[in-house]
Length: 80
Image (cartoon, rainbow, N blue to C red; front, side, top):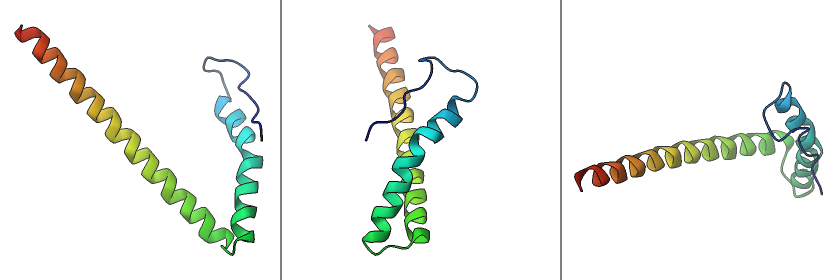
C-alpha cells in the first residue's frame, strides 16, 4: 500500500490533516485485520493508543539522551 505524499516538503497549513487522510485507509485496514484475527475494534484502538504513547515516550527519552550526549561532548571539548 502506498501513502499519499505531502503536498510540500516543508510545513504548510493543514499538513496534519493531509497526513491523517493519508493514514486513514491503512488505519482502517489494520483495524479490519485485527477484527478478522478476533480482536474487537475497542481492543484494537486501545492497543494502538498504548503503542502510540509508548512510541512518544521513547522518542522523548531518545531526544533527552541525545541532548545529554551533546552536552557531554561539548563539556569534553571545552576541557581540551
